[in-house]
Structure formats: structure tokens, C-alpha cells
Image 1 (tube, one colour):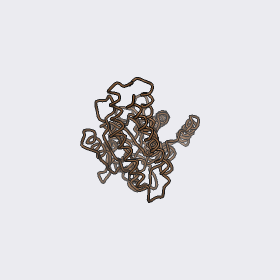
Image 2: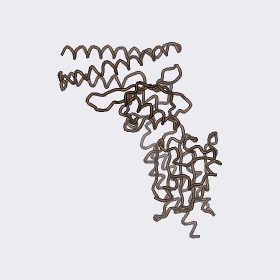
Image 3: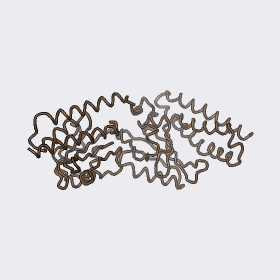
Length: 376
């Protein structure tokens, strides 16, 4: 019992120090590196001292099932959640097990969404392989590591990721504790980065999708189009901007032909002409949709070559900084008549399941318009 009380006192002291670190975020700009060093020291203290101490207390069976120990476990979870720095607990495959409050503010990703997904998936494509490699090295006991990465939603801002090994109580494998902080001197905070993903009301989301459906129906039922390419271009212009940053239309199934490419006017890395020059048959996503006739919804696509490469042999998804995509076959009575591919880039919210369902409905309307054109 004395050991338990001593451990509780040590935890209470730690909580007070964390509160002081939170208040210290308002210190002058030049003093912030000292505050960050102190925060890292406290994290090391948790990993090297408090956590092993807690494991010893659990192993000796000193009231491990008592309410006091349960309170201490809750306290440890509370400490993790309220640490002033963005912290994530991941496994050797970078899959997120826990993400604290500061981490959700820093990354712009809800903790509930991040849990169970690879942390590497939230990084820019060029940094993913290095991050996975360093995480695996830390997990197998090769020592702590630190590297600079970039979040996919903010690729221009360098982020310092510090990794240290941690063995949770009662688990056979080593986990990895990741601390994220801006590579500059300013400490990350909710004011310094994007806030949590906004939680729009169901009514607002539904109204926006109804407006989009109405615009698509109006475009398809307006003045009759003379060619299939004209139908696809009309549909693409409805979706461009308000629903997707990039809209790519391919006609046919067995013999795909690219008819329309609409992208952001200020896109420098990838031009519409680059995608127009692509062979749709070299885009695995398009080919799969044309063959299988099923919609593909991807958030932070893992495969950079899923939409092929541009003329410089660079992956289109990486060059365009695609954060989510929809690849929708235009199917009527089981026959695919074309494929629409939609990209969202940068900090824009990812496509949702509701938006994918609405797009599936619009795809059937577009396919019907194409079929009616063939009957004239």
C-alpha cells in the first residue's frame, strides 16, 4: 500500500507539472524551445519511470483490482489525453491506438477516426515510407528516433516527429509513443493549426446534396446534348468546384477514352493537360471501375500509383496532393458506359459515405442520359 501511495503522489506531482507546461505556452517566442524540452523530458519520465513503476505494482498483485488502482489507470489515461503536446500511441505498423486532444487539434483528424488507421496515412506520400521504417526500428528496440515529416493536409509545414518505445502492461509487443511538434519554435496549438474537422448538421449536409442533385438533373434534362462527350462535360461542370477539386470523365468500358478534365485554376504542380494526355488504361482505379462496375471511395489513398503517372513519370495523386477520391462507374442495366473520377485536395474535407451514395445516384442519371442519346 505504501508503494501505491508513493506512486499516487508521483502522479499528482506530474499532473501539476503538466498544468505548468500548459500555462507556459504563452511565454515569449524565444523561450518556447525550453518549454518544449521540458515537455519532452516529462514524456520520457512517463515512459522510463512511471509506466514501469505501474507495471511492477500490477505484477505484484498489490490491490490490482481495487478501486484505487482503477483510479490510477484512469489518471494515466487522463494524463495522456491532456498532455500539452500532440501525442499518439501507435504499433509497429503505425496503426493508431490512441490520439490525445492536442493531437486532434494539430492534425485536424478526429481521434475516433484516427484510431485503427495508420498514422503514416495522414502524412504526405514522400514521408510515409521513412516514417514506417523508423517506427519499426523503434519498436524492435533500436533506440529512439526523430525525423521531419509533413501532414498531408498541410504539406508546406514541416513537423518534427519524435518516437520512443513503450511496453504497455500485459501486452507482448512494444508500442511506440509519437510526439508531434512544428519544426519551428512555436509550440503547436489549436490556434496555430486547423481545428478539428467541423461537425456539420445532418440537415445542412442533406440540403447541400439535394442542391447538387437538383443541379445535375437540371443540366441533364436541359437542352439536349448532341454527343456523349457533351453529356459527360455537362455532368463534370456541375460537380467541379462545389463538389470536387478535380473531375475526370472517361467514356466507354473496354475501350476507355478520356473526354473531360476539370481542375483547380491555381494548380501549379499538375495541369489539366497532363491528365488529358493520360491513357485511361494506365489508371488502375479507372480500369477496375470499368471492369467491376463498383464505386471506389478512398480517404488518403495509400497507393500513389492508383491513378497512374503524368508525363514526368510522377504519381498523379502525389503531384495533385489528393486527400480523398471517388471513382464511379456510369452503369445502366449492368453495362458500364463510362467512369467519373473525383479528387479532393489539400485541407478540404474528405468525401463521406453520404456523398458517395449521392454520387452513385447521379451516376445512374448520367448513364441514363448517355443511353437515351444512343437511342436517338
